[in-house]
Image 1 (cartoon, rainbow, N blue to C red):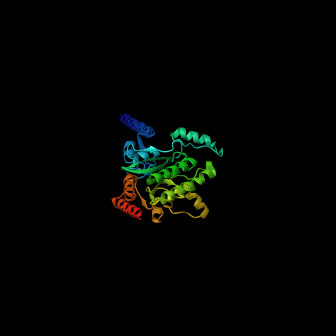
Image 2: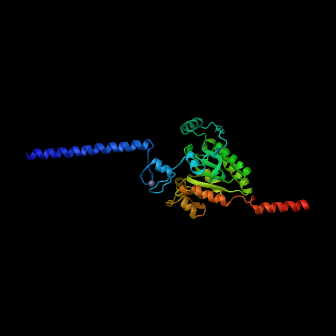
Length: 316
Ligand SMILES: [Zn+2]
């Protein structure tokens, strides 16, 4: 009798464990399925699950630990530009394969596959729009397109946008994220650094404001050119910003580098970056900076001064 009861008890204990395992695995499976469906998002830093809708409402910044998840160019434009004011520029410019480059696959195939997969023509989108009713020219790099690498189209689109901004007397903002120059275009991608820098110099000569925003990661030829040429350089928290990669430097120097090496915080301390701005405050910070640096030619005082000097020239 006692034996029977004992075995019944044991059996129910086994059942309980079996059920628990079963329900555990299904809820885990369901959780994974929901993450795959995009309903939930698991933070890559702290592992906390967040409802994707809530995360998007917080501009893809983890509510728990403040980790800045990567955002695509569409989302960036939505976050920064006022509704219905975005006018894209030079969407017709398409990359070609002048060197007929091949690594593991043909560059032309790689381009086509990436374009089909993410629905973008190249790694930057440029346009004119308004930020809290102030006009700006905005360039947004997209890391999904071959690591945000800078080829001829990235260079040409940014250069044309800066030239438009100079003509219209608009400030320029570029959201940078890039692995560097696009090796598949060789020298043609390297020359974009000089071309964009020259356009920025003309923008600067016209006494106009340029703000690059360095997001995770900003490296290589982009850091070595327009990312570091801003009048005011902003960065997102914890972004990796550098030229050569950590591993390459460690191997060359044969030294272990500190933990915070090439982080936005380290660069701020050393004066390479002017401020670190959390993404949720970026639109307002940019608006304030742009408003403070508006061209002063249209103030009544300047108009009066110009009228006076015109009158005096006419009198002579
Ligand atoms: Zn987190």
